[in-house]
Length: 227
Figure 1 (cartoon, rainbow, N blue to C red):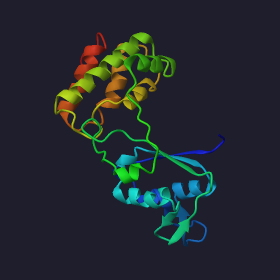
Figure 2 (tube, rainbow, N blue to C red):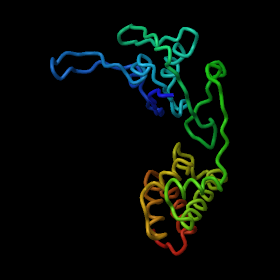
Figure 3 (cartoon, rainbow, N blue to C red):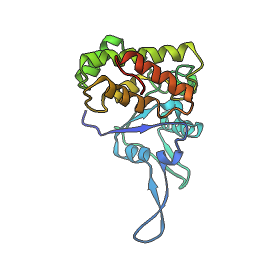
Figure 4 (cartoon, rainbow, N blue to C red):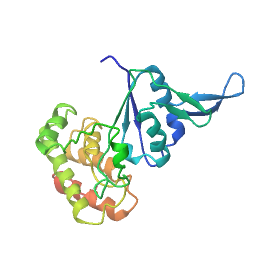
């Protein structure tokens, strides 16, 4: 369509100021000036915005979006009291994973809020398609793809069958799988396992969680011991 694409990533610590702006010090004058946030700039310019992981955003962010998404189509800036009318070609899209046990930290958005969007539900990719993506897009050899998918299935199984992975980001997702594939060319299964461990285990706080990841990598990356 020729529209500029703007992506805003949400998390539990997302600040409303990232959306609408804040006062900053002008390096030339030393005066406080208001710097508009990414959503305000996109609204003025008529860009297309994707609000990623929207149901991770704090309540104050969702409340600010309400006015923009209803019939008024206005964006209120609390710090200045200004109201921004978006460009006529401005569009808002949003993505989210389901709230519940499999995706920690995500809230259930109200029906009224969700009704402001046209909802499209996308099921998880089958393993056969994930294999094609890893091989074609990430340039991972088929033999390594098989090991990666086995680890992925193993960790997903642990996530659903035990209480080990209770952290908000401690289980393996498709995004983790693609990040693993994009970490660069490896010439051995041990190197593959090391890269996987660095991605998946280093962020975990509990030793028993890291052990589950280590066991899965050693089990499915043939010949790898003592990571």
